[in-house]
Length: 231
Image 1 (cartoon, one colour):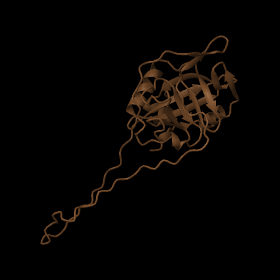
Image 2 (spheres, one colour):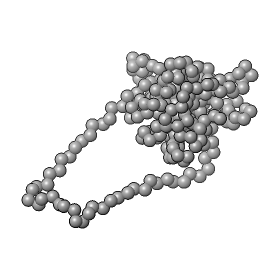
Image 3 (cartoon, helix red, strand yellow):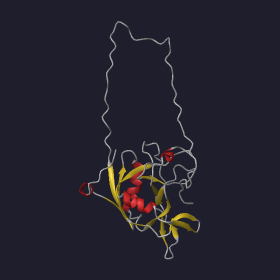
Image 4 (cartoon, rainbow, N blue to C red):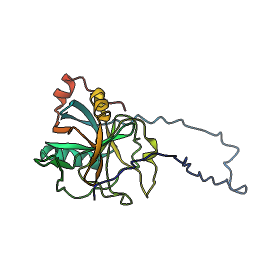
C-alpha cells in the first residue's frame, strides 16, 4: 500500500479545539494587602531556528528547500539520511493533483515506464504537532491512512494552502518539515502537469517527472545561492 493523503477535497468541516477554563476559588487565600503587588514582565527571546538546505533537481528544473531541523528534527534527519544515501536519485513524482499537492520519493520507473516501489528504511514518528502548517510551498511527510506513524521516504509538496491537513482527521495531521525557498515556478510547472491512470495508480503524470537527485548543501553553498527561509 502506498502512503495516502486525501485525493478529493469536497467540503471541509471547521474543527475548533475546545478551551478549558478553571475559575479561581472565591475562598482562596489572597496576597497580604499590606505588601505592594509586584508584577515582573518577562520577555522571551525568539527561538532560533536551524535549517538544512537541500537542492532537489528534477527533470523540470531545480527546487531549493529549507528543512526545519529545530521544529521537525525527526523528519528532517529522515529526509537527509535518504538524500545522503542517494535514495531519491531517479525517483519520480508519482502523484500530482492540480490545486492540491505533488507527491514523490518512493517510486522509480521500469523500462516500460511502470511504477516500481522502492524498499525503505524504518517508519518514523509523526511530528504533526510541531507548529508548522501545510501552506503553499511546504514539504510534508506522506503516510498511510489511519496509521499516524507510518511515514518512510515519501513526501508531498503543497501546491496551495492546505491547512485542513494540519487537523487530526484520522488520529493525526500531516507533518510539515520544510519549505521551498527557491524554485516555486518549478513546483507550479509540476503541479500543472497532465496526469492519468497507470495500473492501480491515479493522478500519475503522463510525462514522467524525474527527481534526478537530492543534495544537501553546505552553509557556503546556501549563502552563495542567497537561500533564506521564513521563520
